Length: 345
Image (cartoon, rainbow, N blue to C red):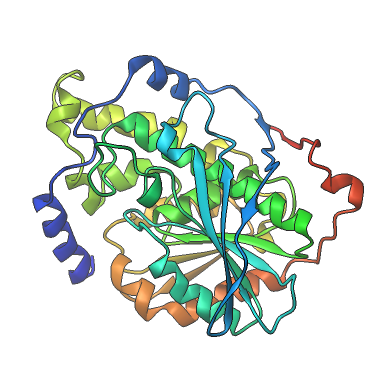
């Protein structure tokens, strides 16, 4: 484990509130999420509101919003409106390739991901930065910082982000962008891998420091000190029983291994940190094994340091994954808002 990851672990243990301070969440909703229906109907965005573009250096920046296709009957009202930033290189024409970047754990706002977006723009690739449900302007009342209050909240955030990301990939293609991809660091990479497995059309996939499931992250890595095990254990037979129950639950509800492998794994490049204290290396290798034929590249350092010191490798991996895609131009009838795509389960 890198020393910076160990130092971060000490800081997180001292932080309040902990994750899941209010326990598991409503039993009926937890049961519903545990026994989700089979199959996946591709979500569509009927109306996306885009603000006029503004120039920021080499970028053209547009603020966007839409009603989350995952909102009805599950997410709290504060999460219903999804927000994103679309950052396009101003010299690359109106329809460059675009990579959807998902947020890491605790990454509220767009600041950290804009570092990567600015560098990608130098190579003619745009970025779409989605704000997670439960984060930033979508944070529910009573939640302090990014620490979600219940396990149900975590599951809803994970699934809603994946649904919104797949919808945005389809929206970008329908706009005419010939190549799309999806990436993210840490939790963002894990959700990106999950969402890519749901998406039925070709897309570049670049999970960065990603796990195959949230289970080992919250029960094995340094983040295993962050959940409020006492709160979870009150209805689960104690903290250790709660740890086992959470691991089983997350393995069944947030694991990319429960979904079919990518149809073409050559367009997937996984990037891992060699001294990662947050994501066990065995978890990344399980995802690589599931996506047989995908490529794995390594960053030196730990989970936190690699994001900054390994940016050149990250950018090169994204560009290489995009280079393995053929441009996709949807005919007009496939761009109609009334069509649904379905993914087998």
